[in-house]
Length: 474
Image (tube, rainbow, N blue to C red; front, side, top):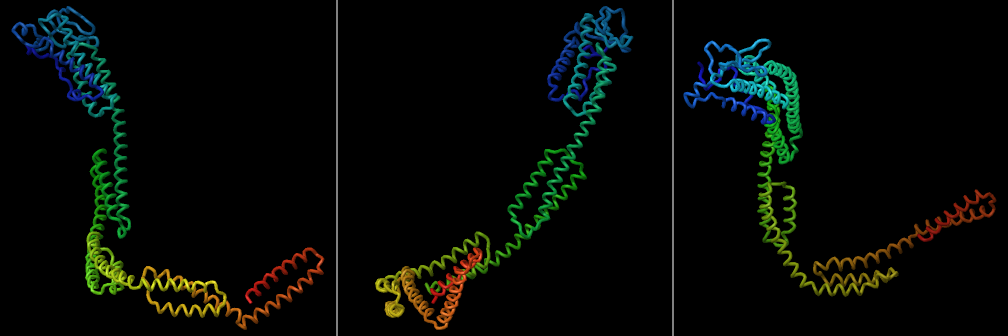
């Protein structure tokens, strides 16, 4: 007699794969679990000797069917508690539940069928939910073996039919999943290839003229893309993944090598510039005793500073502060000297302004000789007065220059009008124009044709214009 606390059937164990349903099948899972709990709650426990006597039992060689008491659906039970299920035209004994009512015995094995049907339904739901076809196929095969000899009462053939149909669907699902997986893999390879090609394009560029900060930011972004694709995308075949990574790594190594070379050369250049600028600072500081007289030499040093190049921002700023400070000393001395000069030359400014007011009428003069004599007297007194403050120098010099320009223009006009050669040329040309005008006027008086008259009038107008120009020049 078997242990009264356990079923005597061979297919009570649920397939391992059915215990990991997809999210969409949680409700069916719960129903299945409830069915299992209900089945396990069948009168198989042994709280007492009386309960043990009432538990299902099976003979070592399997129970045989006696005269049945109840037949319900596809199951029947005899007076000894032996339960059978209809299997085609025959009846197959599935177990025994002695010392229980026929209804209780039959209900127990019907619950076993309900549990199997729940497992089939769960697999169907997983297929509809797009679960992994290989995993579902493995579970379906195990469940099929269980259902074939199931110790349960119900429409076993219908479950087998559903499982066979399910396995047919799984073949198509597996093909679709393989195609989708291949497409996903192809896209993942293409995406990683695009990342590799971008960094290779950067590495193939002119690396002698590169803003390395921006360049390495681009490299970091491409590496972040690579890591994201590696983490979120499908796993690539090792050979392809290794080949793509080698290309990426080689391109990045090329950029890193060029960057290190650039900064090594830049450091060497900065060192040379730093040495030269330190020497310029020392030379500028040595000009301090010369005061304002050292400014021309300082400006020469400033030109050399600009041509020296850069020594790095921090070093350059520090050296420039020292160089500028040396220049400030010179310009401060110049400002002090200018202040002294301004005080000394203030009276000269007043005298020159008065002299300019006195010379102003020359600007209105048209008499060349008198204007020149007046200018000569003004210039003599101008030189005798001496220097004026620097900030007023431009003002007084501009006013004096205007007077000198006016007198020079009077001289030029006089020379042009009195030049014998020019005068002779002018008079000769004027005579020719006058003769031509007289001839044209005579022709115009005799001309009858309107077209000819128009030509003569136009030519006559031109000759008269020329004559006016020649007369004005003479």
